[in-house]
Image (cartoon, rainbow, N blue to C red):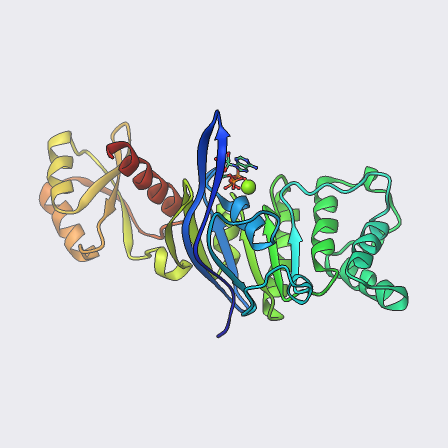
Length: 315
Ligand SMILES: Nc1ncnc2c1ncn2[C@@H]1O[C@H](COP(=O)(O)OP(=O)(O)OP(=O)(O)O)[C@@H](O)[C@H]1O
Ligand SMILES: [Mg+2]
């Protein structure tokens, strides 16, 4: 498996940006993106995602650290740039152009001309399902249609690497699913995708690996499989008072949620389901349901960011 993007100690300080104070937007990022994977780049607002992306694209310069793209440290070289497609955050294209005109414009920027350009525009329109609307002005496009044109724009030069900054923000569930399908198809064709997003459910569905940033520092990195434990158990009970709940917690059956008399317990990984049930039987509580609990990416995100926040406030 080859690495297509590699950063080492990548850092960015916006000097004097915040009332004369420096903003440490990214600190010491070591990251590798592999060929043929979808990498979900996550983090709360202002955590440094767009800053990272802009450095990868050579739009802003790192304060420290190195970037290698397709093995080259010269990321501004045209043969490297030709291999990267980019969908900016909240991409805007002129309203008075038609869909196909926008793509022709970008195709020309990549040196495409004549029949080759026409063929490529046709291909990407087809790829993103916009052939039917190609002759319409962007003014009349819905948000989802604009986003598809944005994606088509990123694909126009048939790049090996796609960097997409929030590709599904603001789209309805159907449009999101369609974009997701397009992205998965691109991955299956061997493209490498770096996607920043706040849509955690989306990211969980399509990413191979994710990284979570908080205040410019990478907190967690791994495959979805590694990071999301699926051994947990959810147990709903009734008829347990606080003393019982406390005893249960000590034995690894921790209260997760409590509504009136109903309590949802989360069973720690080291307690087997049989042991958990035996413990509950001893306490003589009413058992309402038992279900395996799969951690979601949202759970992980909230946990990781929460931990980082509390670590910061105790420092
Ligand atoms: N051009 C700039 N000048 C000064 N500070 C900046 C600049 N761009 C970003 N920042 C700051 O750097 C930090 C990281 O911002 P960045 O845009 O990279 O975050 P993000 O993770 O993309 O956030 P979002 O999810 O809101 O898009 C923030 O504190 C932001 O205010
Ligand atoms: Mg951003």
